[in-house]
Amino acid sequence: MKTDNQKAWFLVLPVLILVAFSAVIPLMTVVNYSVQDTFGSNQFFWAGLTWFDEMLHSERMWNALGRQIVFSGIILAIEVPLGIFVALNMPKKGFWASFCLVLMSLPLLIPWNVVGTIWQIFGRVDIGLLGYTLDALGIDYNYTQGFYAAWATVITMDVWHWTSLVALLAYAGLQSIPDAYYQAAKIDQASRWAVFRYIELPKMRGVLTIAILLRFMDSFKIYTEPFVLTGGGPGNATTFLSIDLVKMALGQFDLGPAAAFSLMYFLVIMVISYVFYIVMTNLDKEEGGK
Amino acid sequence: MTDQSPAAPGAATLPGDISPDDANTKLRRGARFNGSAVVMTLYLLFLLIPIYWLVNMSLKTNTEILGSFSLWPQNLTLANYETILTDASWYMGYVNSLIYVVMNTVISITVALPAAYAFSRYNFMGDKHLFFWLLTNRMAPPAVFALPFFQLYSSVGLFDTHIAVALAHCLFNVPLAVWILEGFMRGVPKEIDETAYVDGFSFGRFFLKIFMPLISSGIGVAAFFCFMFSWVELLLSRTLTSVDAKPIAATMTRTVGAAGIDWGVLAAAGVLTILPGALVIYFVRNYIAKGFALGRV
Image (cartoon, rainbow over all chains, first blue to last red; front, side):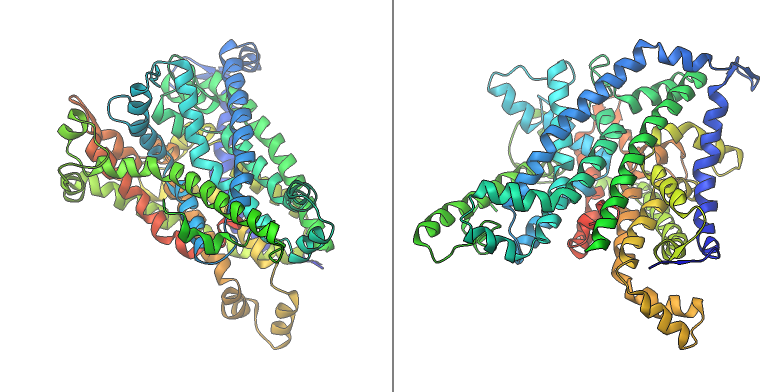
């Protein structure tokens, strides 16, 4: 059991100071901007909740949010089942297990802008293997112009980039199942599906919850990969929340609306993080109860 | 890798593989491990082909890239790599990235170690709120922080320095390090601490001499993940630098010139950014799931 000790605060203090410097001060700047207006030259005056009101009625933000939700939904629907499927087919131990683990982790460690570059080079009709092949097959594919081609490429890129994360977590969950469970299933003459449904899936529940929440959250703040690949285009077809926000804040310097947008964005993330936290701590408790 | 038979020994032990003595199952088992090998081969091919294509491009000249279409380089050339490794404005991008990434890793681990110890061993006022607040920073979108960071670091005169990027990346790396280390520290029995104190160790000596060696794998994993997330990040590092501390990720946009994009050099630069991660991945392969799950697997 943990002991009560208020002096533990001293151990946490460095983290507190550091994160306060890099999180609280900037966040307060955002709050500051969100309630003020300016005509430049550092003259600010109180604008109240105008910006929030404007953003809540802004078609642009709702569209970006809509695209964001559709995107996150699609990639979760693909990556989670595919990740589980891959994990079930992975070798359990030995050289080939390490071999698969190392190769599967590779996309996870590539800088995000390089991920965009890889798919740019891979997908282009003139020089890319994918684009060239599809074009040769007579499919009208050009991710810089076609709406569906852009979406398909961005989604394939994300699946390529992050499915391994789901697979690795599911694999870690599978590894923790004792052999006795499979032996019992064999005695009961359970089908392959029953083994999956009643033994493997419940045992993977914890890690899968973490995987789903992580993927949801990270896809919700995706910026670099689609920015490099499509730049948010064609038109606004792949302009997700972060891309739109950066355009607004650093591109057009609309500080007030961008700040209000930021705060609402952050609020959504906070709520999801809270769900995440509750789930995680409950999992910790279950583990402790064993 | 395209050859399936070597995959058999490892693939033979499958989750459902439970009745080796039954002839009927043996048949099914044969079919199944081949199936697994096929699935894994296809999946790994899906992962590796785009990377192969990048490597392929990096070994071609621009005329070849644009002029003809071939699955492998016809005239193998290392000129693209030579361009990067001999031009200071190119290779300094890597040096800059490495400097702030290492700084960030050292800072993150140093402050996270005592905090993770506190979270794993003690109850104190507000501990759960603090732990949650740290998590929200890991989850916060960098886009929200880009502009305020720019203004904050400009006003304190740190704009375009390595330390600015290193501190900015602490936003998500310190929480990550705390969570991962806490996960590892929880696995160390508390009796060890108590025994050491009874034996007359001070907290500092106990922590450095006894505790840190016990969680050395955890420190390694946390350091790896800090390194990695700082290395892959572009938005903040690009916003906070202009010349002196410009990261390689931002330098790569240089390849877009008046004469179009210099694909060969772009691809070579991309290949070189993959290498650091690829080199150390082998050492953390068994902990990589734990790291991505913030120490919770």
